Amino acid sequence: MDFTFTEEQQAAVEAAKAVFAGVAPDRVPSPALTAGAVAEDFDRALWSKLAHADLLSLLLDAEYGGAGLDAVALCLVLRESAKVLARMPLLESCAAAVAVQTYGGAELKAELLARAGRGDLVLTVAANGRTGHDPAELAVTARQDGEDGDVWVLDGVQTAVPWAHNADFTLVPAHTEAGRTVLALVPRVHEGVALAEQISTSGERLGELSLESARIAARDVIDAEGAWEWLRELLATGTCALALGLGEGVLGMTSAYTSKREQFGFPVATFQAVAVQAADRYIDLRAMEVTLWQAAWRISTGAGGALPASGDVAVAKIWASEGVRRVVQTAQHLHGGFGADTDYPLHRYHAWAKQLELSLGPAAAYEEALGDLLAAHPLG
Image (tube, rainbow, N blue to C red):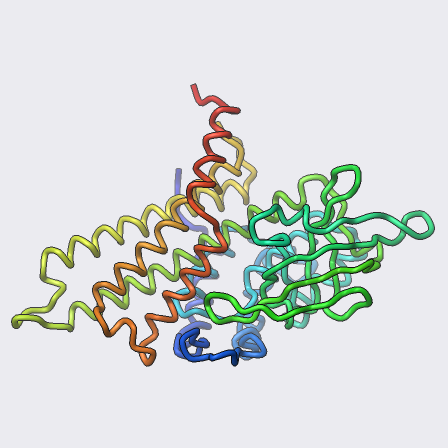
């Protein structure tokens, strides 16, 4: 497979590098120092810069002010954002917007997409279910009500919703009595909607979204087959891109540190044990990268294969979940006690890596899912 990026995708990377240049990870809240005090909002100034660089509208069609690019382009930008721990709902807002564009009605698209592309409207997605372990679409029920079914009534709870306290709308998966999954666009402030504060492993503010007979207009509900499955896979692939970018940032920090730190008159990077560990982590990152682009390419093109695209996403998640953990653990080991210094940003990367690992889920679960796919779709 040809992994050469198009000119448009490469231009998106260069624009992202320009926006994120000079962004310091020490601006990120430290889990070790917050003591209950968390940032009330995401980085709005950086969000505005992304909007002015047209990076929030990458996946939107030209009629909504976008560039019409694909998931690969989004993952390239996400990768750059994670290198500096950029605090903003880039993945969630872009993924929700493109789901509306792909599956939503004309009225909803006209109302939301151009504003989301300009950064005037912020979206997020509830993808963790009630406990973080059960399927998100089963955590909320949806039933039609009103004349001609022009209202959907939602009941249930979604936990650990990222940026829920700051987003204007949350895209919530819900199941109907008929077993279908719909996506409802729920306003942050709305009758029957309540938010409770939760704190992530990375020290960021999450929200527990409770819905009690929340009535959502039918035009704000996406009832299309396959919409949630596609969005879920896009979110997972984007999270793999974040893990890759974070891992690359951490390995770069480790390389710089071990090249300067001396023992017995020599840089520790010249010691075989150090070089072998760093090389192993480099291999992890390259495996994370190749599986990421395979998954993003399958989602973007819908290209056929021996397995459904969910198989490629599962492989990317296996490598991302395991790989990012190994990278930060090795980085902490090679930094010694210096890695635990709260004035040094490595501990922030470590906390974010753990949050990404938890978000992706255990690799064993995706190995089992991949086994089921292989059993259902024999390659021979």
